[in-house]
Length: 121
Image 1 (cartoon, rainbow, N blue to C red):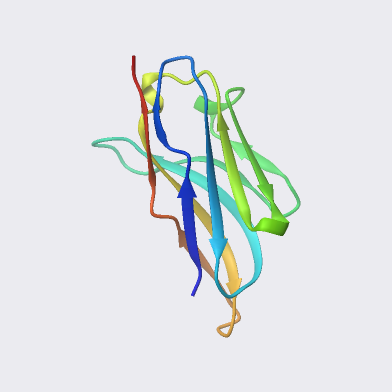
Image 2 (cartoon, rainbow, N blue to C red):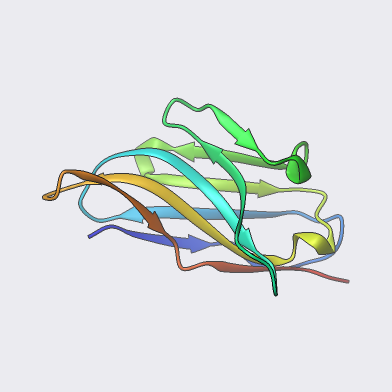
């Protein structure tokens, strides 16, 4: 069974920065796309950014130029560097990975438990 463990959330002032991490552990054969999503209070979960195994990235418009997604394939870890944060970035942030695990040898989407990010003065 594969599990994702997130870290790095917390309270940050407007204009500040945070770095989130998400590490996968378990019976992993391969990981394809890694991504970050977020869910603000009273809203649906939304995509923030994704990165392929080859390093191609995709961002939603409201984080372009402020957030950077990266990954360390040797550590099965994805990161989200968040800069110039504003109160609208307040949300629970979830990581997601497309994982090929054993012994099932099938691809499945796995979610992290979520980490709360609060942007407030």
